[in-house]
Image (cartoon, rainbow over all chains, first blue to last red; front, side, top):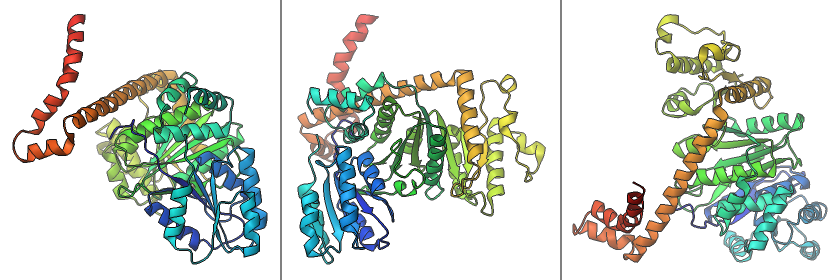
Amino acid sequence: MSTDTAQRSIRCLVAKVGLDGHDRGAHVIARAFRDAGFEVIYSGLHRAPEEIVQAAVQEDVDVLGISILSGAHNTLVPKVIEGLKSYDALEDTLIIVGGIVPEDDREKLRSLGVAEIFGPGTPMEETIEFVRENAPERP
Amino acid sequence: MSRVDQDELISALLAGKHRALARAITKIENRSPGYRELVSELHRHTGTASVVGITGSPGAGKSTLVDKLAKRYRDRGETVGVIAVDPSSPYTGGAVLGDRIRMASNVGDMDVFFRSMSARGQLGGLSTATADAVKALDAFGKDRILIETVGAGQSEVDIVKTADTVVVLVQPGSGDDVQMLKAGILEISDVFVVNKADMSGAAKTVADLEEMIHMRNDPTHGLQTGHHGFEIPDHLNRADPADEGDRWEPPVVETVATAGDGLADLLTALSSHREHLETTGGLDRNARIRAAEEIRQHLRSDAATLLEAEIDRRGGIDALAERVAARETDPYTIADELLEPLRETIKPRSDRQE
């Protein structure tokens, strides 16, 4: 195989942020993304928003998937988004949130820059399809 | 990416913008258009970083050790770049890159730039991509660069060869690993680390490694001593350039990476090796060997690309394979035919020179 053939692969950061210790969903999605041919970087549990920002910037991911089941999304997601902004990394990162987010909070997250929110019971194919269609084109 | 964008990317990288460094590595990894010019441009700004490659079997503790090493360097005020290579699925190309989870000591510290890379099933290409990514980190101004890879095969050996110093991690009780090391990694290792040294069997593994190193340097060694006790000879002090000449005897360092034990010894071993390279001219020699290898690698892959196009012009590889299968021709003849134009263009020039 030539080293000159452009080889693009969708890079995703699957992030667990805050004190929420439920990572089954994040593991399942990480595996599903891998099997879909994505490159998945898993953050591990209990990450601070700054760590997620650091990882997203350094790894230059196309997609940032934040998994939150603790209800702290209104506090944590804005911090991540602010951090990405400070590195000029917000506009070309697709941000999706997975977990339990009440209907009332969804609009707010969307207005901050979250592209989509996937609640419990979302078919895996739906999430993968969404990422495939919306992952930003990189120069 | 346009010429202007590319120039902007390069100046932003050289100005220390993390986003630009990350994007440059992405271009390198993806082989995006313009990546060659990018690396060519960066090359002249490289040469200041000290590069350490770390390899070893899965679960040996490479990521944890890298994390702790990075922390020590940061405590000394040095900046650190890390490239962590993980395997990818040969079927889907997908990968879960998990080395980052262990980077717990450097939370929120942007001066540790950690980048995960997947193998992406490239043949020989991964070592090129890694070497190019190291150049980006070097040009960015990182003082220390750590390359972490799963030590299982030839491509890993190629990757760690881009380092000035190669560390091979072994875990206690891994007799099979030591067997595996004999096959090739032994030759490239500058420092052995027996990690998880608090586990039973650590002393045995250290002894095995040392015996192996001595056997390599002095094949009759085992016959003279008969046994190895628990006393670990201090290779670091014993290495006397006057006696040993240019030869470097890899020390065996014991660590417990999770607790940070033995880290000071490892740092001493790394700086001793660095000193050894500097005093013996090994640093320059290695740089030339690497440059030569890179040139050859580029030639091989570029030539392969040209020939792929030639194959397509002649109806594609499947059609050619079909003819071979039908016994109409054979692989050597086809290779000769495909190479003919290349041979024709190169030959007259070499004739002229003679």
